Length: 105
Image 1 (cartoon, rainbow, N blue to C red):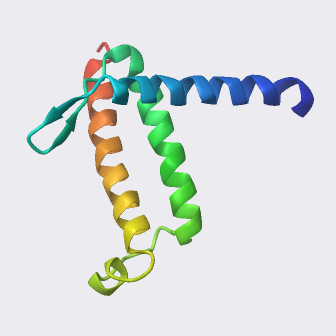
Image 2 (cartoon, rainbow, N blue to C red):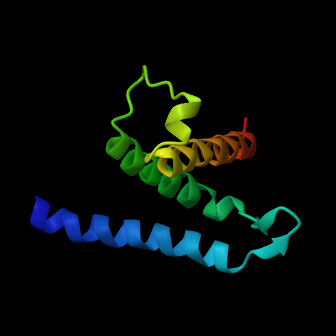
């Protein structure tokens, strides 16, 4: 099964990542950073890629349901990873809310 399914799964994931990178490349500089427009077609791809990124970072940080970070953690060696994990969560939440809002009733 792995020999048959794995190449297709990898190709699908790489396609999702490529769609996200294309969206980032099409972004324009804004006052507070890059302004990126995500259309309904790419929304699923963005949500899935952000989820994968959070899973990777969360695994490295050994995140559990009970994980709570202190200010000291943010200034420690894992601070940048923690900040990225949290920021990705905010962006992912906004995209999921947009996705739910775009679904037909």
